[in-house]
Image (cartoon, rainbow, N blue to C red; front, side, top):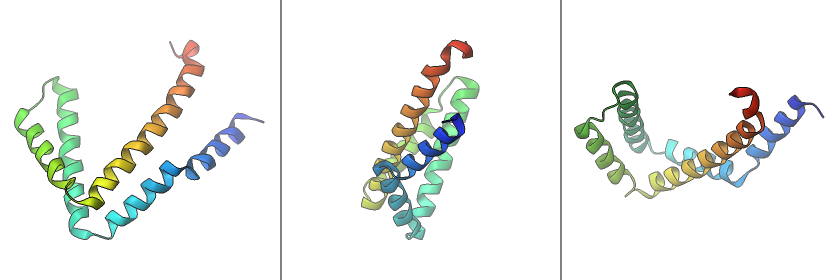
Amino acid sequence: MNVYDTANKLAGEIKQSEEYANYKMAKQALDLNTELKIKMSDFEKQRYEVQIEMMQTGKQDDEKYKKVQELYAELVQNEVAKKFFEAETKFNILIADVNKIIGEAIKDVMQ
């Protein structure tokens, strides 16, 4: 079996995983609630901006970070948003683990 066949098989298995299915369902449920989707989009934008600023400057704007935390606390009060965050986290862990496994296999040539 060549590497491309294996990668395609892995992609198929990821799409059949519980983590993928739960994340997809949570995203679909979120998409049905326009107001919540807008709030989530705003949260993601603000969180991204805080992360970019931190990477660029090495400093965290405490006011912006606090606002992001408050928005998150508000969002997780909503069951749809809470399930989305949980599903997203579990899916991201799955992908990170796969990436780590691949990284470990090739680290000798990547250094």
